[in-house]
Length: 427
Image (tube, rainbow, N blue to C red; front, top):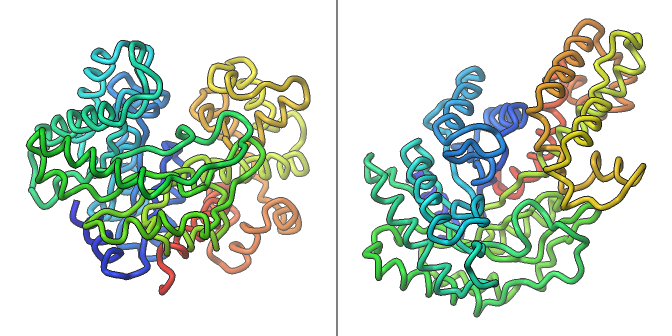
């Protein structure tokens, strides 16, 4: 994918540029991302699906890779976003969704998934085989991880049949802790050592050579390391540049490869800018955007309580909590409180497990009713200022209307502004 390779080349040449990777399958988040890119004349936008969200079995979204592409492209077409500026990526593609199986069975499933992603036109592929399967040791040896990544790369290369200039680009490595935010309270967070980062690159390069994948290696654009950023339920570990100085310097002499930073959600604008400066040129964000979505929806729910009579209210917030409690599979192993403390985690945890529930039919219906109510009774400006000051400012400036979709998009867009500023400091 030449657009991404060009951006990485610009960064390697000394330009302080980066790219935001929005990892979400939520339609309002996708709309906000594309509208933000249009407003800022971004050369392209990068949207990624994870192996848990989207795979040949449907993932938790119910979508296979071709479905996800059609879903995003339909939103882009409705908004007038050029499809040739839309780049799709696959995150943590490997056996992650099937680790309960023996390794060979899990890898066979991963091979099908990788091929499906590539055939569906996903151009950025994160090869992540760091997780142990049912018959594996824990942790996996570095060589095993690299061998499996090269095996999946071979599948991706064989699946691609388009223009060589648009052949997939690859990301290797993984971060610690696991994707999506820490499951428990964080203690001290260790930054990846330069030696470990370079050893990962060397081992993967060796395994690619053994598989005859030297041409594919030239399209490896990034490796995932831990720069010292993470979040758990209620707090954020902020980036400290001084702790990553040696790690940052280690990637400078490595041709065509930058760092990809995961779990950058909730970092400050200054921290995001420092990450890009320090060669973490790809910034991944997922729960952070859906957290902003939830903030906006809860604010609209509060406005509805003040402007709509009780028997007409959608009560979205109550419906969402009820559905989460009725179907605890997506949060039970992460949240361990009870009563009011559990309600607090269900709604406000930074890991944002509520994001798994937005497609629930009852929640979708409640959201639609909420929006209908607020279209019938437009939010008064004083209430908008009270509950959604960011959207209030956008309405006053004329960049948003009082339509609830516009108000939600403004909230998400403000969060994306920090990423845009970090990746484009001279714009």
